Length: 294
Image 1 (cartoon, one colour):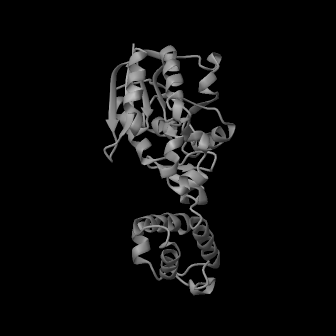
Image 2 (tube, rainbow, N blue to C red):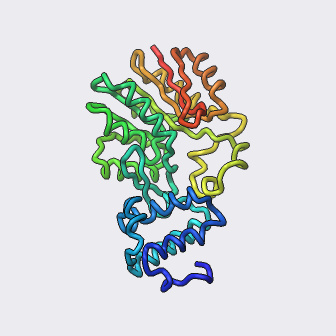
Image 3 (cartoon, one colour):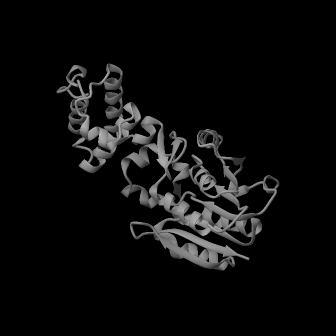
């Protein structure tokens, strides 16, 4: 905490708001600070955005003040707010997260919505989520596609432990598999799938220098980065897996690197996939692909 503040100067919510803005204004813009503020007070005292505006005279306990100070000190070190409080929201569901898994992104919500929209008239869907991480894709699909049977695979036991907790938290029935898709064990997949979805590592090392410090310093590099000369390594492996494990007319969905859409569609074409569609996200970037294989 800076020299200009001590805990006794934060008596109520308004004082805390001033403190947070004062401490963070040299690092973050106003929009980011407002977002942090909303998350902090929702997490600590269950206040909504409206509560924060109209209840500024609310007195805070010493415990809450100490928590605010601890959170702000970590934000000043660029640690993501989601890791600091240990949770986040994705597709209107709550997820526990830790630095062992990526923080779910809005782009991934768009991928989930695409799959849900595509399956609105279908029953008894078998789905596999590859590289599940926090389990956000698999769990959001399970909660929104009724009568679906969902499997989720991840190489890392730590990630699977978090995904399993999130499945319990959201009362989602998911079958979890510990496997490495780059050298997968065929015996772990007893049935074929209507849909295979993945948000694999796709950020090239060359892109690291333009990324935010909070991502590079804190999020798991194994879930983010790939070698510049082999950027599609996971897409290549997952496409081959899909050829063997999709049902007739099954669909493969990917979140993608916006700069590699053409490379990926060429790869899928060469493997015999059809009806390949590249979809833009809300920011008009090529961020999703759907392909079919008969």
